[in-house]
Every structure is written in structure tokens, then in C-alpha cells.
Length: 423
Image 1 (cartoon, helix red, strand yellow):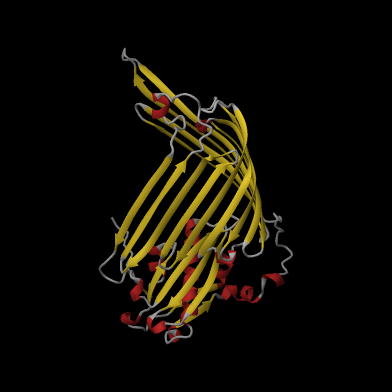
Image 2 (spheres, helix red, strand yellow; image 1 turned 45 degrees about the horizontal axis):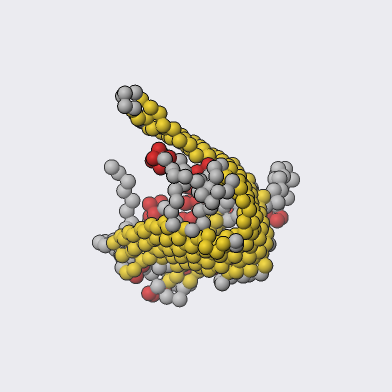
């Protein structure tokens, strides 16, 4: 079936007729969200696209959220400012997973265009707004889908909310003394309803690297390393009201890099959302707890003299995500430990933010810190220099940290209505 947008845009050819307005009276619009700015400026060339939200008459905020069908939902919030204070409009746009990037961009802009008309319908700008309906679509617009009696239309197979996605990528790179080969394949299976979500995710990855050196006689020597991972993750999550969810998680994997020949994990889980799940596109604050059983069979004997073992393990995750007009914020805390020895634990903190501080100035800061005391799978003995340089095995560490910082400052002409992609 055609997407919601395709039906809508085919039926409505929307035009904002501001030609009679003097340029200084054009609506000043600031748009914040995942939109192709060049395309937007070209198609919405009757408004002034402002680079500073403080001077805008209309602040457009668009938040993106993934759907269980692998599609996307875009949440629009249009707010009037200044002489348009008090005018607000909110609506959604759904894009299915068959739409290309340019189709999604066109859908976002066309729906924004219609939203601007709705926002301005009760203002002094209303007389300058017009909507045209294509003649060839009038009859289709007048007849709802539920009344469509076209008996010749082919029946679509009912997938009952199941979504399947097969993917794979291969990369080969070579130079005089180094050759890399990287293969990743997998399958995503997802069934999402308001009450239940089922996910199955098998993966396979293989990486090999060959570095050519010379021996003491000057003869070339190939040093080859490889990493292989075969894994499958599965989960079933049941909704319980607007704030609670329960689930069951399981996985099995072979991972040569971390010395695991076969590792299995089974754990029930419970999650509480401090905000209603309906508010996820704009704000999300959750606490999730898992407790379960781990069984590992190792490729090599570990530092604890184990070739296989079974252990209990529990995990607590607390995450906060905010998507607001001032910017985006994420912060997460994760803590886990093995039940037989609380000293075998791991704690991590992760934070990222992209915030508009003041006129023209934005900063993005991110970082994480992880305390690691649970590397039960490390192979016994010391890694060779070759294994370290080629990244062939996991190394012992009791922490991991990173820090990122950036800023941007935009100033100059308040209007940005020109698209010029020339050399």
C-alpha cells in the first residue's frame, strides 16, 4: 500500500501565496530538526528562514522516533512567537521503511508546509494562504479507504505486524604492506504491537588483517590476525500500563576476540518509565533491572583457571533522554555484578548533550567513564606483542574513558534564504 504521506501529498498540492506581501513582512521561521535545509529553502521560498530562534515568528521543532516496523515517525511542534504568540500546532508524520531518503525529505517538508498553513489560519496572514486540490484526485479524496470498492485491487499478504530485514556489508582494503577484509551480515526480526514486542537478531561478523613485515634476512613475512563473532539475541517485552514493562532476554554467541567459544545468557527484566511511554519522542526517563544466568565455555583457559563456568548476574540501567527546542540530552548509568562475588562488577556513566546556549552559540559535549572489574573471560598468560598490535585479543583493564567537546557559533545576516551548491 502507498505510504500515508504518498496518499496525502498526491491528494493535496499545497501553495502558500505570499507574493502580495512585501519581503519585510514574510514570515520568519526557525526550523530545528532532521530536515534537508537546502531542499526546505528551495520549496518554502516564500518565508524567511532564520538562523536565530530568538528572532523567529514561528519556531518549528521536529523530533524523530523509530517505529517497530523499521519506519520512522516525525513529531512536529509549531509555536508562534512575537505577534504570533499563542498560536500552536502539533501533528505527526509516519514514513514507512520502503521510502528513500529523498522521499522522506520531501514528506517532511510537504507536511511542514501544510502545518504552517494550519498555524497561520487564524492570523492576519490567513488571507495570503491558499490550498489547491488536484482535480485528478478530487474523487479519491472524497472517498475514504474504508469505502473503496475496487474488487480488482490485489490483496496484500497479512504479515500480522512481523517485520524482517536482511542486511550485509563487505569491505576490502589493501595497500603495499597491509590488507583488511571485513564482513558483516545479519537478520532483524521484529513484531511490535502496543501490548507486545518481540525481537530476534542473529548476526555474523568476520574480520581479518594481514600485515607484511620483513625478517632479519630481509624476506617478507605475513602476520595475519582474525576476529569472528556469531551471535543471536532475542527478547519478548510485555507492556503493563503507561509506565511498566516486563520482558525476557536471551542470547548466545561465539566471540573469538573476548575468548568465548560459546556464551549464553537468559534473564527476565522489568522496566519503569517515569514519564508515560507516549512522551518518548520528547522525553524519556527509565529504570530497568535484569537478573539472570550466564554460562560461558572458553576458547582458552582464563586467568581464573576456568574452561567453562555458570554464574548469576544482575544489571541495573537508568537512562534519561530529552529532545527539546533548546537541544538534546542523554545521560545513562549502568551497573552490573556477578551474584557469586560482588567485587566482580562493572559501572558505567555516559552523557551527551547538544545545547543551544545563546544567540548563535551551540555546544556539544559528550563523555563516558567505565569501571571494569568483571573480565572473567580473559585468557591466561600475557598477550604477545603481535596480538596487541593487531588487535587480536581483549586486553585487561580496570577502566575505560572518553571525552568529546565541540562548539559552533553562527553570526552575520539573520536570513538564510539562498541555496547555492556551485563549486
